[in-house]
Image (tube, rainbow, N blue to C red; front, side):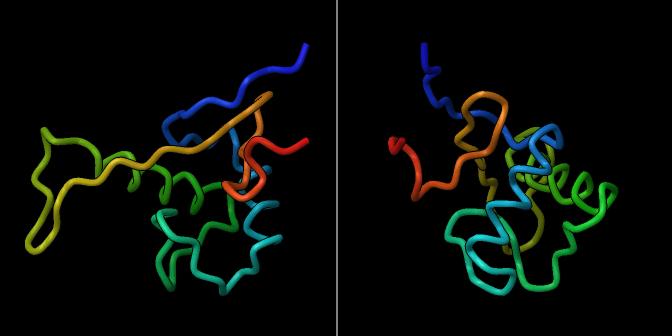
Amino acid sequence: MRSVPELISPTVRLRESWLASREEWGREVHQDGAGLRAGDDVDSTISFARWVGGLLRQADASRPAGEGHVHAGYWWIAEDDAYLEPSRCGTS
């Protein structure tokens, strides 16, 4: 039986499949809604964890958003313990 894609909070657990998705998009291609900004380093395990932590902090309304910023929640689409590219959701 095939599992159903689900929305989850960003997690370091999906690092390998997230990086594979980024490679398909292209390293320098803007991905709307990904929270990845120019200059963000996500290649090493440590830098990816730091970036994911930043995404999670942006959604934490108990923390100040910072001058000129608002809180933002990021959601990833995952299935079978893998990050799905938004363009591939619902396809076989």
